[in-house]
Length: 235
Figure 1 (cartoon, rainbow, N blue to C red):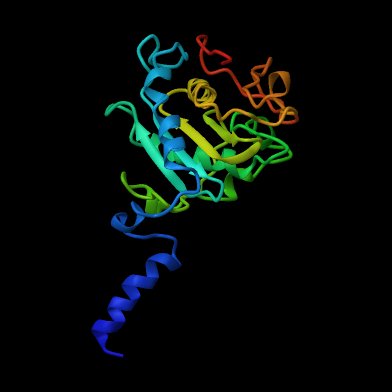
Figure 2: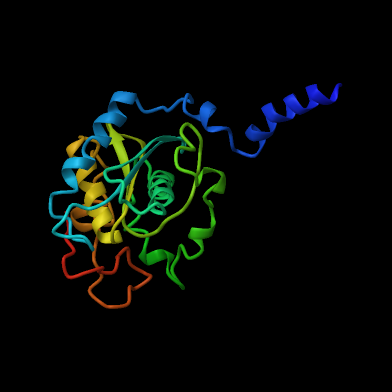
């Protein structure tokens, strides 16, 4: 084997082996959710961010990243509604989408807000945040489409997506308080008609909606989430 051929072969197989591929290849990779469904969901962001979601920037529109993953965890789309959105929130949005997808199924939908309580010290899911780390190869903007970035986030902003009675993936939103992020994600999913969740959720009225703690310190035996600001809403 010549040195040039060996180098070419390594350049081809090594990225796949470590879960990373150049952006040019990634942009053409597949997603199990139909493109028009993803686009319809992502177009909700621009209208939802002006709808009174609370947060740090209220009454101005929220500055958000929105990410969609399919059931296999592959990144289908990641967008932002403003160039002023926090750069670090891109990876957080992807991780929230992954978390909601990873820990929901056709029997129970768990939003990332629902997971806050049990992942606190002494909670039944304590340590979950360390289970599926985000792949740092996908931190650069423009990377990761069609691949599985992973990541675990257990505060508000991620919801599972349902269509025809079945889970199809996850939506993650980040760019403000976690409470405002949840409100935006929850409204986007509802407006896109991908909110047909199972009826036995741990949130209010059997949903996966955010359930605010009634005490300053969240009880890890509950599926509650702390308040962020006085402007918090339950969507």
